[in-house]
Image 1 (cartoon, rainbow, N blue to C red):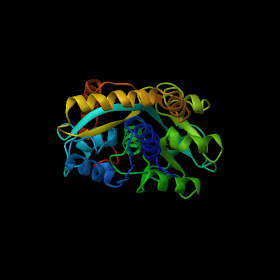
Image 2: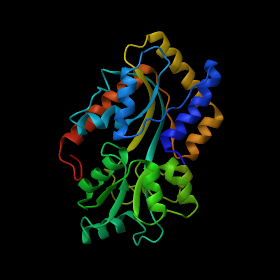
Image 3: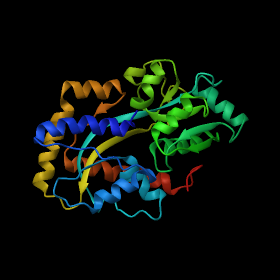
Length: 285
Protein backbone atom coordinates (compact mmCIF):
# COMPACT_ATOMS: atom_id res chain seq x y z
CA UNK A 1 0.00 0.00 0.00
CA UNK A 2 1.73 3.18 -1.16
CA UNK A 3 1.02 6.75 -0.14
CA UNK A 4 -1.11 8.94 -2.40
CA UNK A 5 2.06 10.67 -3.64
CA UNK A 6 3.73 7.34 -4.37
CA UNK A 7 0.68 6.10 -6.28
CA UNK A 8 0.63 9.29 -8.35
CA UNK A 9 4.38 9.06 -9.02
CA UNK A 10 4.10 5.52 -10.32
CA UNK A 11 1.20 6.32 -12.59
CA UNK A 12 3.00 9.38 -13.97
CA UNK A 13 6.27 7.49 -14.41
CA UNK A 14 4.55 4.96 -16.68
CA UNK A 15 3.32 7.76 -18.92
CA UNK A 16 6.68 9.51 -18.94
CA UNK A 17 8.52 6.29 -19.79
CA UNK A 18 6.30 5.79 -22.82
CA UNK A 19 6.39 9.44 -23.94
CA UNK A 20 10.16 9.90 -23.49
CA UNK A 21 11.16 6.47 -24.75
CA UNK A 22 13.28 5.60 -21.74
CA UNK A 23 12.66 4.14 -18.28
CA UNK A 24 11.54 6.55 -15.56
CA UNK A 25 12.23 5.05 -12.15
CA UNK A 26 10.42 6.07 -8.96
CA UNK A 27 12.82 6.42 -6.04
CA UNK A 28 11.12 7.02 -2.70
CA UNK A 29 13.03 9.26 -0.27
CA UNK A 30 10.61 9.50 2.67
CA UNK A 31 11.06 11.33 5.93
CA UNK A 32 11.31 14.80 7.47
CA UNK A 33 8.18 16.17 5.76
CA UNK A 34 9.74 15.60 2.35
CA UNK A 35 12.86 17.61 3.14
CA UNK A 36 15.21 14.68 2.48
CA UNK A 37 13.82 14.24 -1.03
CA UNK A 38 13.83 17.96 -1.83
CA UNK A 39 17.38 18.44 -0.57
CA UNK A 40 18.54 15.62 -2.84
CA UNK A 41 16.62 17.07 -5.78
CA UNK A 42 18.01 20.57 -5.21
CA UNK A 43 21.56 19.16 -5.37
CA UNK A 44 20.98 17.16 -8.58
CA UNK A 45 22.12 18.31 -12.01
CA UNK A 46 19.43 20.26 -13.90
CA UNK A 47 19.74 17.98 -16.92
CA UNK A 48 16.26 16.47 -16.84
CA UNK A 49 17.39 13.14 -15.45
CA UNK A 50 16.06 13.91 -11.94
CA UNK A 51 12.57 15.19 -11.21
CA UNK A 52 10.54 15.29 -8.03
CA UNK A 53 6.90 15.13 -7.01
CA UNK A 54 6.18 17.87 -4.50
CA UNK A 55 3.14 18.84 -2.48
CA UNK A 56 2.31 22.07 -0.69
CA UNK A 57 4.36 20.72 2.22
CA UNK A 58 7.66 20.78 0.35
CA UNK A 59 6.99 23.88 -1.75
CA UNK A 60 5.26 26.07 0.85
CA UNK A 61 4.61 24.82 4.40
CA UNK A 62 8.14 23.71 5.26
CA UNK A 63 9.45 27.23 4.70
CA UNK A 64 7.51 28.50 7.70
CA UNK A 65 7.69 25.47 9.98
CA UNK A 66 11.38 24.49 9.95
CA UNK A 67 14.19 26.89 10.84
CA UNK A 68 16.87 24.50 9.57
CA UNK A 69 15.41 24.01 6.09
CA UNK A 70 18.36 23.23 3.83
CA UNK A 71 16.68 24.09 0.54
CA UNK A 72 14.76 27.12 -0.68
CA UNK A 73 11.71 25.97 -2.67
CA UNK A 74 11.67 29.14 -4.76
CA UNK A 75 15.41 29.53 -5.32
CA UNK A 76 16.53 25.90 -5.55
CA UNK A 77 13.71 24.26 -7.52
CA UNK A 78 12.16 24.76 -10.96
CA UNK A 79 8.35 24.38 -11.23
CA UNK A 80 7.57 22.13 -14.21
CA UNK A 81 3.88 21.19 -14.11
CA UNK A 82 1.00 20.71 -11.72
CA UNK A 83 -0.86 17.40 -11.65
CA UNK A 84 -3.97 17.66 -9.55
CA UNK A 85 -5.91 19.61 -6.97
CA UNK A 86 -7.48 17.56 -4.21
CA UNK A 87 -9.29 18.14 -0.94
CA UNK A 88 -8.49 16.11 2.13
CA UNK A 89 -10.96 14.01 4.07
CA UNK A 90 -11.42 13.56 7.81
CA UNK A 91 -12.15 9.91 8.60
CA UNK A 92 -12.78 7.87 11.72
CA UNK A 93 -12.73 4.27 12.81
CA UNK A 94 -16.33 2.94 12.68
CA UNK A 95 -16.38 2.45 16.46
CA UNK A 96 -15.64 6.12 17.12
CA UNK A 97 -18.67 7.75 18.69
CA UNK A 98 -18.84 11.02 16.73
CA UNK A 99 -20.39 10.51 13.29
CA UNK A 100 -20.33 14.12 12.07
CA UNK A 101 -17.98 17.09 12.24
CA UNK A 102 -20.17 19.13 14.63
CA UNK A 103 -20.42 16.09 16.91
CA UNK A 104 -16.64 15.65 16.74
CA UNK A 105 -16.02 19.29 17.72
CA UNK A 106 -18.55 19.10 20.57
CA UNK A 107 -16.89 15.94 21.87
CA UNK A 108 -13.40 17.46 21.62
CA UNK A 109 -14.48 20.53 23.57
CA UNK A 110 -15.76 18.27 26.35
CA UNK A 111 -12.50 16.29 26.31
CA UNK A 112 -9.82 18.83 25.31
CA UNK A 113 -6.57 17.23 24.16
CA UNK A 114 -7.89 13.73 24.79
CA UNK A 115 -9.07 12.71 21.32
CA UNK A 116 -6.28 11.48 19.07
CA UNK A 117 -5.66 12.16 15.38
CA UNK A 118 -3.13 10.11 13.41
CA UNK A 119 -0.96 12.51 11.43
CA UNK A 120 2.28 12.53 9.48
CA UNK A 121 5.06 15.13 9.81
CA UNK A 122 4.61 18.65 11.16
CA UNK A 123 4.81 20.15 7.68
CA UNK A 124 2.34 17.72 6.10
CA UNK A 125 -1.05 18.95 4.83
CA UNK A 126 -2.94 16.76 7.37
CA UNK A 127 -1.00 18.25 10.29
CA UNK A 128 -1.42 21.82 9.03
CA UNK A 129 -5.13 21.28 8.36
CA UNK A 130 -5.59 19.85 11.87
CA UNK A 131 -3.93 22.98 13.30
CA UNK A 132 -6.22 25.20 11.21
CA UNK A 133 -9.26 23.23 12.42
CA UNK A 134 -8.22 23.62 16.05
CA UNK A 135 -7.63 27.34 15.56
CA UNK A 136 -10.99 27.89 13.84
CA UNK A 137 -13.11 25.80 16.19
CA UNK A 138 -11.40 26.16 19.56
CA UNK A 139 -11.32 22.37 19.90
CA UNK A 140 -8.10 20.67 20.94
CA UNK A 141 -6.90 17.28 19.70
CA UNK A 142 -3.85 15.13 20.37
CA UNK A 143 -1.83 14.81 17.13
CA UNK A 144 -0.15 11.39 17.10
CA UNK A 145 2.80 11.47 14.66
CA UNK A 146 3.58 8.62 12.25
CA UNK A 147 6.39 8.30 9.71
CA UNK A 148 4.10 7.86 6.71
CA UNK A 149 0.52 8.05 5.46
CA UNK A 150 0.49 4.27 5.41
CA UNK A 151 1.46 3.98 9.08
CA UNK A 152 -1.19 6.51 10.08
CA UNK A 153 -3.90 4.77 8.06
CA UNK A 154 -2.94 1.32 9.38
CA UNK A 155 -3.27 2.49 12.97
CA UNK A 156 -6.70 4.02 12.35
CA UNK A 157 -7.95 0.95 10.50
CA UNK A 158 -6.88 -1.18 13.47
CA UNK A 159 -8.63 1.14 15.91
CA UNK A 160 -5.48 2.08 17.83
CA UNK A 161 -6.01 5.75 16.91
CA UNK A 162 -9.58 6.80 16.10
CA UNK A 163 -9.13 9.62 13.55
CA UNK A 164 -7.04 10.79 10.63
CA UNK A 165 -6.91 13.39 7.90
CA UNK A 166 -5.78 12.02 4.54
CA UNK A 167 -6.13 12.57 0.84
CA UNK A 168 -9.32 11.23 -0.68
CA UNK A 169 -7.27 8.92 -2.90
CA UNK A 170 -5.77 7.31 0.17
CA UNK A 171 -8.71 7.12 2.59
CA UNK A 172 -11.53 7.00 0.02
CA UNK A 173 -11.50 3.26 -0.73
CA UNK A 174 -11.73 2.48 2.98
CA UNK A 175 -14.62 4.91 3.45
CA UNK A 176 -16.50 3.38 0.53
CA UNK A 177 -15.93 -0.12 1.91
CA UNK A 178 -17.17 0.85 5.36
CA UNK A 179 -13.82 0.30 7.09
CA UNK A 180 -13.74 4.03 7.89
CA UNK A 181 -16.46 6.59 8.50
CA UNK A 182 -16.18 9.77 6.44
CA UNK A 183 -16.64 12.76 8.75
CA UNK A 184 -16.06 15.70 6.38
CA UNK A 185 -14.06 16.84 3.37
CA UNK A 186 -11.97 20.01 3.37
CA UNK A 187 -12.75 21.45 -0.08
CA UNK A 188 -15.55 23.80 -1.12
CA UNK A 189 -17.55 21.07 -2.89
CA UNK A 190 -18.23 17.43 -2.10
CA UNK A 191 -15.89 14.80 -3.49
CA UNK A 192 -17.66 13.00 -6.34
CA UNK A 193 -16.42 9.57 -5.29
CA UNK A 194 -17.42 10.28 -1.66
CA UNK A 195 -20.72 12.04 -2.27
CA UNK A 196 -22.14 11.08 1.15
CA UNK A 197 -19.34 12.93 2.97
CA UNK A 198 -20.30 16.58 3.64
CA UNK A 199 -17.87 19.47 3.33
CA UNK A 200 -16.72 21.48 6.33
CA UNK A 201 -18.79 24.37 4.98
CA UNK A 202 -21.90 22.20 5.00
CA UNK A 203 -20.95 21.16 8.53
CA UNK A 204 -21.08 24.76 9.73
CA UNK A 205 -17.47 25.89 9.15
CA UNK A 206 -17.33 27.69 5.76
CA UNK A 207 -14.03 29.44 6.52
CA UNK A 208 -12.12 26.13 6.64
CA UNK A 209 -11.61 25.45 2.93
CA UNK A 210 -8.35 23.70 2.12
CA UNK A 211 -7.60 21.91 -1.12
CA UNK A 212 -4.03 20.77 -1.68
CA UNK A 213 -2.12 20.40 -4.91
CA UNK A 214 0.75 18.31 -6.18
CA UNK A 215 3.17 18.98 -9.00
CA UNK A 216 6.45 18.09 -10.67
CA UNK A 217 9.58 20.12 -9.94
CA UNK A 218 13.19 19.97 -11.11
CA UNK A 219 16.51 21.35 -9.86
CA UNK A 220 17.04 25.06 -10.41
CA UNK A 221 18.81 26.04 -13.59
CA UNK A 222 17.09 23.66 -15.99
CA UNK A 223 17.01 25.01 -19.54
CA UNK A 224 13.63 26.70 -20.23
CA UNK A 225 13.11 24.74 -23.45
CA UNK A 226 13.46 21.44 -21.60
CA UNK A 227 11.14 22.62 -18.83
CA UNK A 228 8.55 23.49 -21.47
CA UNK A 229 8.98 20.14 -23.23
CA UNK A 230 8.41 18.28 -19.97
CA UNK A 231 5.41 20.48 -19.21
CA UNK A 232 3.89 19.65 -22.61
CA UNK A 233 4.46 15.92 -22.10
CA UNK A 234 3.05 15.91 -18.56
CA UNK A 235 -0.04 17.88 -19.58
CA UNK A 236 -0.71 15.34 -22.33
CA UNK A 237 -0.32 12.46 -19.88
CA UNK A 238 -2.70 13.90 -17.28
CA UNK A 239 -5.25 14.74 -20.01
CA UNK A 240 -5.57 11.07 -21.02
CA UNK A 241 -9.00 9.63 -20.13
CA UNK A 242 -7.56 6.91 -17.90
CA UNK A 243 -5.50 9.45 -15.91
CA UNK A 244 -8.49 11.79 -15.55
CA UNK A 245 -10.65 8.88 -14.39
CA UNK A 246 -7.99 7.86 -11.87
CA UNK A 247 -7.76 11.38 -10.45
CA UNK A 248 -11.54 11.74 -10.22
CA UNK A 249 -12.00 8.35 -8.59
CA UNK A 250 -9.42 9.43 -6.04
CA UNK A 251 -11.31 12.63 -5.31
CA UNK A 252 -9.00 14.90 -7.26
CA UNK A 253 -9.29 17.35 -10.10
CA UNK A 254 -6.72 17.47 -12.90
CA UNK A 255 -4.85 20.76 -12.77
CA UNK A 256 -3.19 21.97 -15.98
CA UNK A 257 -0.69 24.81 -15.73
CA UNK A 258 2.25 26.17 -17.64
CA UNK A 259 5.57 26.42 -15.78
CA UNK A 260 4.88 30.13 -15.32
CA UNK A 261 1.40 29.49 -13.92
CA UNK A 262 2.79 26.89 -11.53
CA UNK A 263 5.35 29.44 -10.30
CA UNK A 264 2.53 31.94 -9.75
CA UNK A 265 0.50 29.31 -7.85
CA UNK A 266 3.46 28.72 -5.53
CA UNK A 267 3.95 32.46 -4.96
CA UNK A 268 0.26 32.93 -4.14
CA UNK A 269 0.36 29.98 -1.75
CA UNK A 270 3.35 31.53 0.04
CA UNK A 271 1.45 34.80 0.41
CA UNK A 272 -1.61 33.09 1.90
CA UNK A 273 0.00 30.35 3.98
CA UNK A 274 2.92 32.49 5.07
CA UNK A 275 0.45 34.77 6.85
CA UNK A 276 -1.39 31.80 8.34
CA UNK A 277 1.69 29.92 9.53
CA UNK A 278 3.55 32.93 10.91
CA UNK A 279 0.76 33.34 13.45
CA UNK A 280 0.61 30.85 16.33
CA UNK A 281 -1.42 27.76 15.47
CA UNK A 282 -2.22 24.99 17.96
CA UNK A 283 0.17 22.05 17.72
CA UNK A 284 2.65 23.69 15.32
CA UNK A 285 6.08 25.11 16.20
